[in-house]
Length: 304
Image (tube, rainbow, N blue to C red; front, top):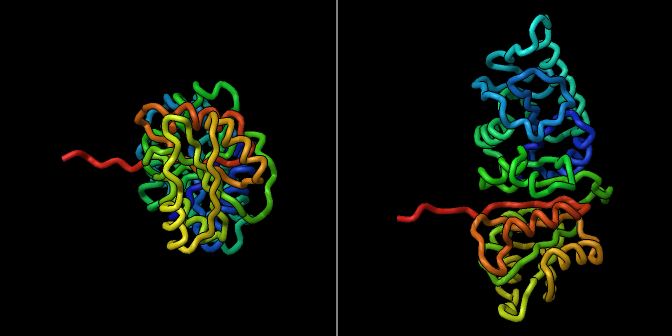
């Protein structure tokens, strides 16, 4: 897993942090594919795409090689009356921007992609087309998180995809070059362990330690993490575990700082119930955390 990374870029000042995290995740040989989405109404590179969810979807998709070799099959829509050359300018600006990012990834394979249409649709289509394992996105706010989680491009991508999504918050702390420690919060609920299918191969490839944080309560005191630890050991990764009582969000944030964690990885199941990691827990963590947060909806299977 995480051998093909899709880094979504909009040209804003938040791209730098997302780039740094994608590069750390890619350590050990992963591909990084770069994607810039131009909404149906022409806008310049650098216009934040978060919340641009009402533009009509266009069919053409730009695919190709890196830098100037990237190409568009189809045309950009012309939405600015009397502005000759607007489409070419926007496309050429996007190509130049991705070229500059690619130059900062010497030796890292991947393609530079430009797409038109709704950002969430474009991201998901490209992820499917290129068999992506992990999507990396910046988040444009750490306030109004409930509204963000329900209505933004990032939320739409997470809600509609079963791929893991790495969210890079605004104001993230500068971290060491190598990703050293991954915190995985767990409860008694089986859903909380689904994220381990992503974390184990990632930790093995980048040589990071997995820190299991079991959050328990008097009703469900926890069953221990020995079985989880055995699976991680068999996978060849290293791990430690902690069992704590209390509010999940507070315990997660506390141990992120006390254990100097580089990345938090959580399952984000849609199903709700007592003591399960509901949407409110990732929301609360994301609103306050200064580290990247990896979320994934558990894989669902159709009932027979």
